[in-house]
Length: 194
Image (cartoon, rainbow, N blue to C red):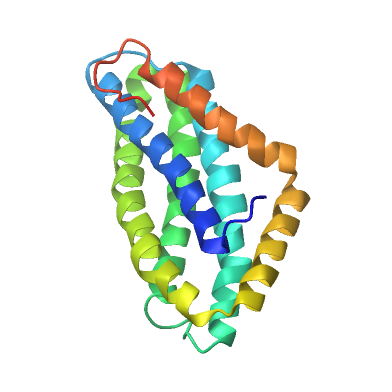
């Protein structure tokens, strides 16, 4: 872990997630044009979003940041925490859909194509606005509310969370995000350099 503030660490993770979500748009374009998607790409995409995006990233937010903010008086039943928690749950449901629609597509590409496109589109729709709410509303608020000592304690908890998942696992998923994009963007004119 670096000497970044906890919110800066979460923002860094957002950039990685945004890149992968951007890659989903390229997958949709390929699927709509009739191109086939390799099963390994779909499996890696699901694993990245489940482990890095949800277990690691959302875990840090829900288990540590949100609970600390609640202790500091931010209501968990109000804005912004209730909205963000709802969106995390919506994301989990979409990941379950991604797993199912990917498996169907892998077994029977023709039959699973439209369902997979729909799931990818819903993920693409969810993440940008969700990340915006955290980057521009929640994190600045957290930085104002939390003392330097609380920020340091939160950083230590984030490190512990990553250790429990596995520091190498976390780093490996950052690298996997790059590999996913490379594979998705092969032969695509719509990909930008990440």
